Length: 158
Image (tube, rainbow, N blue to C red; front, side, top):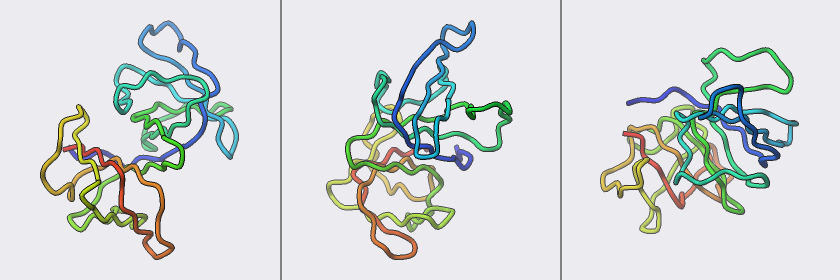
């Protein structure tokens, strides 16, 4: 399954509230450097490690830019993936080629024996992750073009 290109939004959760009459959906507000952005989190949203989301938590929410959105302020998107972040973490998601270069050229991955490779359900992934949509957790990058990093964790969407 090749997933669409996702847009990341990183911020701190400021509030979580029910979303309309849907019992399985919540509206999460993120405080970002650009202001507040709201995300609808439904039962279809993939939350990494099934972490319970809380106010004050730093996360990256990914949304599909090809899905229609209401023209309201603050902006409101349907979250496809939510990645809770540890201090210093960054997250990127997208299609990576067999050489582990992001399809948009924004990031080059170098794996080492400490990189955790897993599937979305937490099982170990034992093949080369290239050629798949990847959710990448990393900390530092080089200043080269493209930036290079050795991820701490990769979730492979086969």
